[in-house]
Length: 175
Image (cartoon, rainbow, N blue to C red; front, top):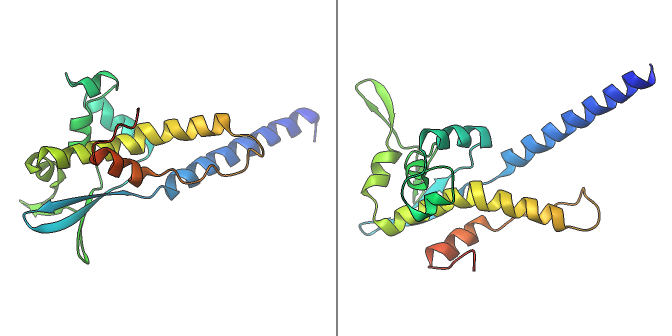
């Protein structure tokens, strides 16, 4: 094999390894759990991570609104949270995928539930979406840039759920 062919093969293998590493990273991201109460019943919503391309497509459907939060983003955080895919509701041992059959068609009811939530619960869901797709990637990039030593070492799990809890309790993640 010529030197050029060897180099091309090496680069191809390197690229495939990077793609596989990226895929494995995205698949390993756990959902963020947001706790709420319906009447007197405690419940948990699981906010799954969606692939960045899918998230980008979602954000393109909802341009920024007039909210000060939206001003720093390229999308409407409220509308993206309201239309976020794959939400599940957990009450005790019961798990609900939030799909219902209406007129012989599967309907995702998360947007309907989101509209009926108290503002503080909706805020928690917005912060979970923000943490998964804005805060965590930024933290991961910064940690990788600042890290010394072996580049193959793992940065470790970033505390997404702890961040969401901190914000839900009135904390400022930028302070």
